[in-house]
Image (cartoon, rainbow, N blue to C red; front, top):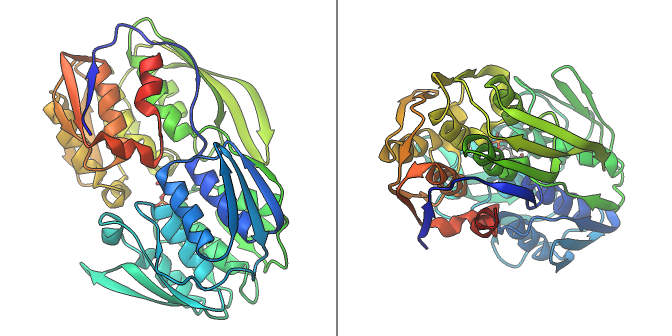
Length: 427
Ligand code: S3P
């Protein structure tokens, strides 16, 4: 489906964005593994999270969905049943990697796969540590990497101490989910802190995960207990509106009830460093997660350098930060972001390709990109590359471009943000 975006003179209003994708996945997974019922409110009904629901239904878990309210009838840590067919995660890397951790410890074997993009993404980053724990995972070799479809033969697992070679919350979470079933205490050492939603939710539901410096430890879990889980708005989805509000003239946007866990607020920290007018209000903690309203106003941004331990805190927001950098004064350098190459698309290439079509002064580097702010872009025919975050970033760029911007294959926004274009129009 093609979408047309025209230049906007100003954006004003108060909105909410759909629930956090990472937290929604984990709520279904951990709800299914808990004893008793888990009521989730604010659930993201995007395609990725519905893939997680589908996988658990195929393993005997009853899940009711009523708009954004979801009820998961948990069957405990050992209650999943062998699926009759191959599990399919669609486009969802989070589902595949976290499920691999869970499936490695079950008393059955099964197959799991996903769409064309997922079958190209590296799974050895989870199979290597899980194999050290005794897991039996096989798959397809592509470019020297293990990829889906995967066959997982459930085993009794043992604890490990594992130093993550790349900062990845998905890998950390896969190990933690397996560690619940393992004999002994598992520890994971992170090169840089990554999102800690798994740790927070596991502790909320009765596990004992400890964090000290860069080390996370997990003792075997006897039981998790079903509870009410509130899912805050996804800061990765709010990112498009935060950026639009900053770069469009005469704008003020409030995004209510957004998850502002410090492992996710790299975008607002970097924008503040660039001179942005961003205020958090109504801050509270719900189910262990920090939540706030975020208000942004049109700001004169300056270029900056983004790298090091900030990268995992804004990895999914880099495409839209690149758009903001086109409207900042001076140069923005994004480095240490090689991980962008193994996302839903190679986001270093796809961001540079699409923004170049719009006249941006942007150059690809081996670990990121360099953008010289020009303060102007031109409407163009852009391509989503079937990557939701590329489609939404092109839309934000289009709001500030002369003429009309077309976005081909824009329906992929449904992966994480159903209703994105309608919400943008409402402003
Ligand atoms: C996620 C972790 C990140 C992120 C992805 C969601 C998660 O991936 O890019 O969108 O929910 O754990 P990596 O773990 O590969 O960095």
